[in-house]
Length: 386
Image (cartoon, rainbow, N blue to C red; front, side, top):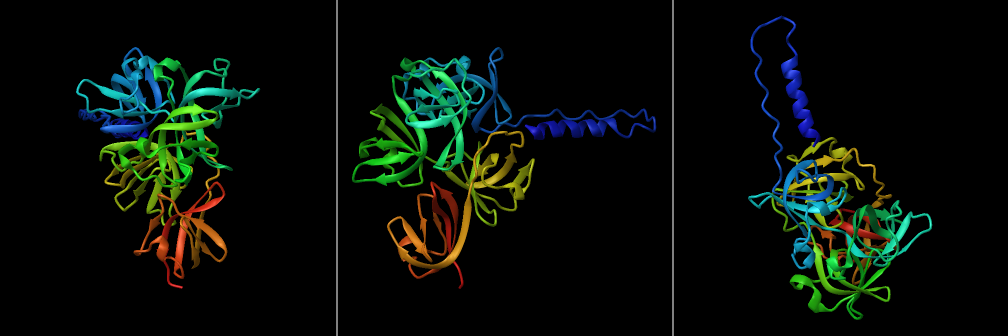
């Protein structure tokens, strides 16, 4: 990481300066630079050294003991993977708790079959989602692939910034499709919801992991089958950062920041607090805005360190935020209105001052949020003096 380079440069300056007087005094040897790795890390692979069996993630180099598909050990691919299956820009989770080396879990955003590729090879469709990526001749329709991505703001809502595509064999994943995304348009009557702009998912309560309650706005991982352009779930898991270890470093896109920059949302699936103890690398608090790629080290939901990835060249879209004040004139099951404007609530809406959606009518409030799929989605609601 950049901080390691800086430490080395500082040592050079200290030992290289002050020699003009010709003193014969021995110079102290600078301490070696030590890469203090987090216990766990999530992010895209920077590079792989196949000969030395090491992988670099978030600027840290790990000796790889084994490679697995996902962290739930439910697919037969777990027994077949090695470091040779890793490629740069794959999204992974790394755990250093194994004594003999790190365990690398491949965490793709999608697994499925390419249903079509545009004539210019700039867009392709997997699991009903149209994705943009400059593909090469290696890929063709009906290929099975793993897609790694980060959240991206699009005209249709919260989309996907593709980082990498890796061809795989269908037998490796037992023909099982997988997709992650922001849950929307939840309909308990038809047992359906949407992921992204176009993928309709059918589910039954029995496939929801940990008996979680599904809500609009959650980031979910869904496994199952594509049938007639519809995704039929065999497993639905709500993804958050709530159970992350205290020494856990996460790379991702800032998807919302409140007005005083005391809280922010990462990858549309978790919120962190910024306080006076938060350290910033390669930037400052003023740089904390939606659309930035950062690495976050957090303790109990508080950002201990935020590092900005200044060399990131990826386009993450035009993230649009809003703030409004006014009297709430009406309330619905998932929305409320102020002066004719409709504002929606979801799983990540935070109510301050003991407010609840059902008690908002007639209250003068300040609401902050982000625009997703053309809808103003509240992230923070607090009572205001009129």
